[in-house]
Image (cartoon, rainbow, N blue to C red; front, side, top):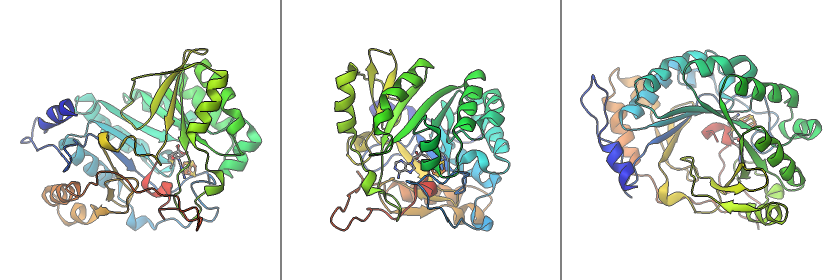
Length: 348
Ligand code: SAM
Ligand code: SF4
């Protein structure tokens, strides 16, 4: 973390006086921003949305210009990694304009990484455009290779469309990482196949433990990844790796395939101490921790004033409240999720 703080101390655009880095009360430098650009989606994954989701009115959403301003302000304060997510980021109208304007920070060397998390449905259309802007990597969420299960999980999605999107992304030269949510009794028998498929195509695969978010909280489908890993190690040789992608995943190398397999276990505290990230929703609400309700409104300061003074003030104040760790608790007795927020609001 020392190096991270050192790196983040010297920030600021060439044409602006250097702004201080964002360092939280526990000495963690904020270098990673995830921004949800829309709460809408063309899928209705069972663990993420209800079928009859009510979406936000347009006026509540940050405009593309406001999103650019907000991201650029964080970059000015030392953010080096930016991920756009959603909802489904690629269904936001005009999204390529935002990718295009923000890619100036990549070109100028102010960002090390600019990427997105997508369900892949629109990738066939946008992959080459994204690659042309200098984007190198994309995370695609895909829980199953079985078309019927895919439809059951996503309710509205089509597997072939996503596979075509992955083909297009790879053809455009993007590195694709697959994220799969582990669901008890749904896709748990499919992980060996997913590993062989992903690694056979040169893609990392990361398994994600289902989180108790939203009223829909899928507690009945909760499958601890410790159990998944134990089962996989009966079939594969898994070697722990030091590799970190900048996120919370712990990686192993699968000897038989030569590929990398990640595990994200958000319900354990194993990554809070090195947490370098914050999230902003499409309405400009800043969450300092995915697992806590505490938040700060950045839309008001953004809209109140053309300059960034008020915005920086609000961000600084919020970062002083970044908690040491999160509070996920599965309340099994009441079968209630610990948080009432949908993933499609904060972005995954
Ligand atoms: N629509 C895009 C997608 O699906 O990749 C981006 C947004 S989605 C909310 C981001 C990630 O969150 C996806 O990988 C999704 O599987 C994951 N996710 C959604 N709800 C979840 C939950 N309750 N627990 C764990 N992961 C979840
Ligand atoms: Fe949409 Fe992604 Fe949520 Fe699925 S996980 S409903 S694709 S936002």
